[in-house]
Structures are given as structure tokens and as C-alpha cells.
Length: 96
Image 1: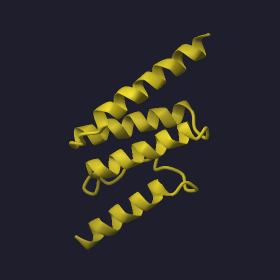
Image 2: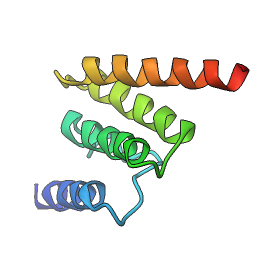
Image 3: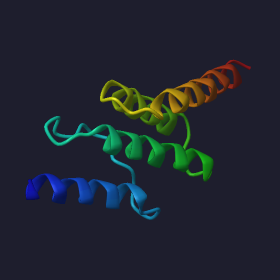
């Protein structure tokens, strides 16, 4: 239990710190929760909103929000829809 709490605290701390990059690799499935996946997705989305990220961060956000939804996050559906729209818009901008 302590290991789980320390891992969760570490991930949430890294995700919420603006100076630190967002998690981009897979997390041990036994430690991953909907809340952690959602927070990582929000980190990537914040990078885009802050102008520091681009399509790769949108793709990471989409993947993490999808994982959060699979794990039962209630807020992930709205975030998935928003990120999907941003990705569609980015694809259309690249085609021009």
C-alpha cells in the first residue's frame, strides 16, 4: 500500500509541476489508476494550451484520456472529445 501511495504521489507531483515534462511512456499497469491517467492527459493538454506542445502532446493526451476512460474516469469522455477535435483541426491545418 505504501509503495502504491508513493508511486501515485510521484506521478501526480511530476504531472502537476509545470517545469517538469509530462510522462510519455507506459506506467506499470498495477499502479495506474483512472486519476493518474487523467492527470497525465491533462499535463499533455496543458503543454498545448501553454504553447509549448503540439500534435505529439495532443496524441499523448488522447492516449492517456482513453486509458483513463477505460479505467473508469468520468471526466475522460469530454476531454477525449475536445482533444479529438483539436487533432482533427491540426490534421486539416497540415493539409493546407
